[in-house]
Image 1: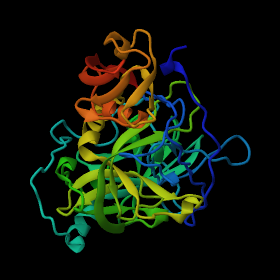
Image 2 (image 1 turned 45 degrees about the vertical axis):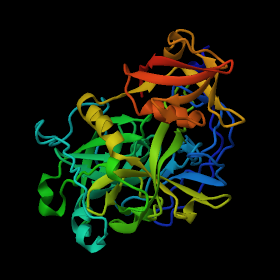
Image 3 (image 1 turned 60 degrees about the vertical axis):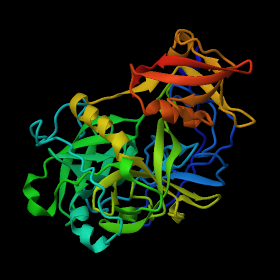
Image 4 (image 1 turned 135 degrees about the vertical axis):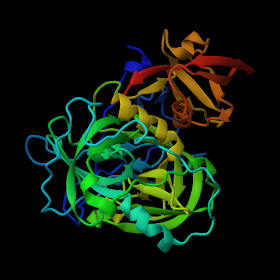
Length: 439
């Protein structure tokens, strides 16, 4: 069995009650540095969430509440973040809301009112925009472009938030709708409380993204597509706003700043399937309060443009998941999400890049040591072998296994990735042609 074929189990998750509906919330434990992480996106050992170095004394939590059926007493499942924060899924619509939407059994089957190609175009406004935040000015449009999502299925119930896109689409986190397996139901609630059903167009666990098809034509001006900006224009200290349904409180707005950029973040799913894809995200960190129920919702800049998709929070060590935000929230950068959204819309699936090695941080912090290299894989084909210490990928310094995989994930299968590494004290270079795996 090669390193990329090995799978890892998930330890028990600590439950937390959501006061809005009392489903279980996924809790995630921080892990220590130095353990091996699969270079193909499969999590073997646990890695620390160092985001540019440093051990996290806390718990990474999905901002979503998930009640899971296990054929007996309710169990809990979710995603464990192990190298940085975890995606968060939200408390959903009121308990009286009965979801009626049915998830398509076949990803990629167009949902209601997906529109023409031109209607579905995702146009980004890349102008500089304001640097001073006026929340009241951007709130009305931000609220119309944000929905609450509730998903039910044989896996239980989950809820979160979503962003309205052109062409009758809503994007959210995969972990928000993961409980609604084929045959399950997804319901979308707009800002004024009216509800409709959704069809799953495509989902990716590897990128923790999902796209829904939703007929919003009957809601008039109460709902409208979000304005899209660019995460490339963000800077530390810039003001940002989040919108979502934390703890079931739909239409909640919070504000803060960009605390940091390029935080490597790992999200390990609850599946014990060998080689199941794991989400690795180069996250935007913000102190704008993000709580259970904000998962999948928008992170806006001062111009009212979406720049990220809220996914995870970090809580204090030993604190219950319901304790919520401590000012450490994380979002998927919009620029990295858009190609995945397009692929999920048109194909119903997406391939993530495979490097083909297992890696671990070095004790001296010089780089990432390849503990194993897949025979016949991309790294091996480029001449890399076990024991090599990778210092840079695509010109970007890497410090641990999570950072290595995050940099790989910023590319697409088939691309060439420049690798700088150490072997026997000598600096060497290689070009790795990434392969791909659907997930």
